[in-house]
Amino acid sequence: MRDIWTANLVAKLHLYDITYEELSEKLGFSKNYVGMILNGVRKPAGAQEKFEAAVDEIIKEKATQQ
Image 1: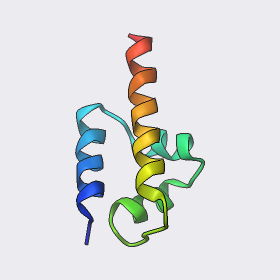
Image 2: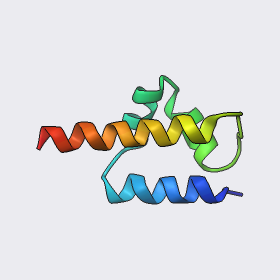
Image 3: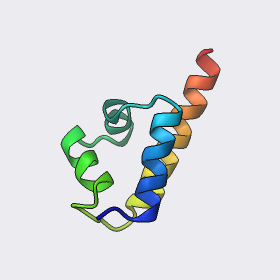
């Protein structure tokens, strides 16, 4: 079962058209591992902070490209 933070993060991914591939590249994790974390299968310590920071960074990068 997903935690609230992962549900909110997935919504943010959809809102800003961020793919699991983009997120996995930013984090240095495989797409499968990113999916496991976002789907609540894995719950590593510090994941929320790392994932939220990576998504925010991707959003900023996309904003500067436009």
